Amino acid sequence: MWRKPPGRGVWSAVADLVLAVEIVSPGSEAMDSVTKVREYASAGIPRYWVVERDGPQTVTLHELTGDGRYAEHARMPLAWLVQTAPADHLDR
Image (cartoon, rainbow, N blue to C red):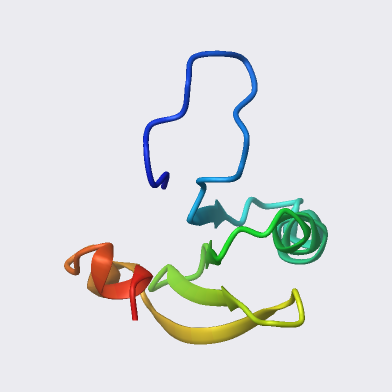
């Protein structure tokens, strides 16, 4: 999710990126839950959501802390999350 639409091009700067959502894929669990977490945090993306492929499709909402790491903010089923507005989770 972007604060404003990115310009056209192959690569976009992450300066205005406010949310990254990752759906954990079979076989890439370590990449999705360890490597990408570090990369997104080092890029300064304020929020990172991880969607598991379990029964309720659990979504873990992470927020970037002052020390440059993500802290778990909430965990909920995807069905509940999609019934809420993005602003409910982005601006506190």
